[in-house]
Length: 196
Image 1 (tube, rainbow, N blue to C red):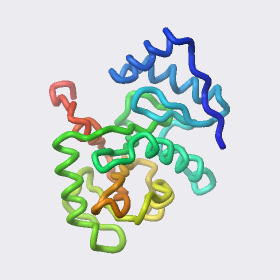
Image 2 (cartoon, rainbow, N blue to C red; image 1 turned 135 degrees about the vertical axis):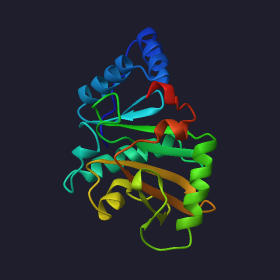
Image 3 (tube, rainbow, N blue to C red; image 1 turned 45 degrees about the vertical axis):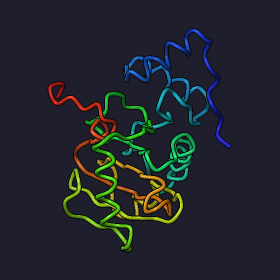
């Protein structure tokens, strides 16, 4: 079992959690330091799980089990059919410390999940074409090692990786890999094109 960061004093923790929910980079950096000080384990800050490394580009065949543990931790906090577990690629995140967003999606996320289910639930292997970020997706029974499965489809060094738990009538998980962009805020429902 990986070590978990000790909680900061109550007032500092409340401020950090509030900032993390608001997406403030200072809170994100604080939570990331807490995870690193805990010996490389996984630590929750707001709606994110924080771990070691900079991002998906840190994942290798030798350490993928560690990152799959982080995804398991995110799944334990948001594993229902209205959840998405998201990692953004380099160049599309505000903090370069590994973190997994676990969010209850809004209308765009709901529509995208339905579209993905129609494309992958009854098919084996990776399906592509018409998915965001020139992506591909595949269905896996239960909750798989998400990053291990994503790596089996090809390099994820520049990818966004999204897990859609309780998909296909609750039978399993859709793993989606996209390249060169992030759809985290569309999935969350707080996308503001004027801020881009």
